[in-house]
Image 1: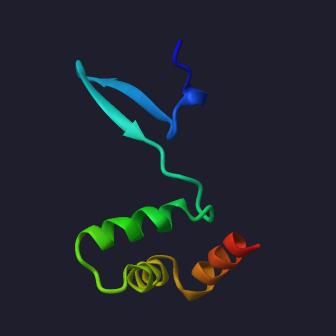
Image 2 (image 1 turned 180 degrees about the vertical axis):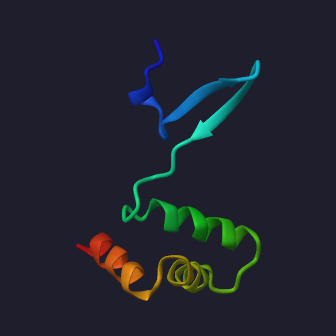
Image 3 (image 1 turned 180 degrees about the horizontal axis):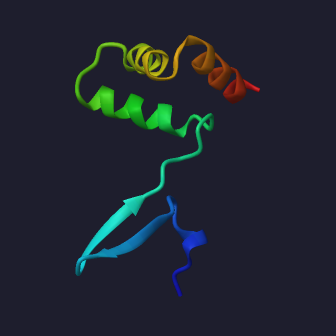
Amino acid sequence: MLRLEDMEEPCLMVNRASTRQQVMKKPKLGSGKRFKRLTSKLKKKGAKNPKALAAWIGRKKYGPKKFTKLSRKRKT
């Protein structure tokens, strides 16, 4: 029997107007999984330095203070 806990990333099946859509939950902010996923996507697209680009995107999206706080949270 397949349980939600056994899945890598939890997902929910939502029935809207007789069409099924899969809604994926994002990993918890500060876990580093979002950064890692973005880095791998950028690498596939051919970025020269995907980690630096992902960090730049994060600083732009969350602001320098919050992004620094998130990176510190991950390191400890």
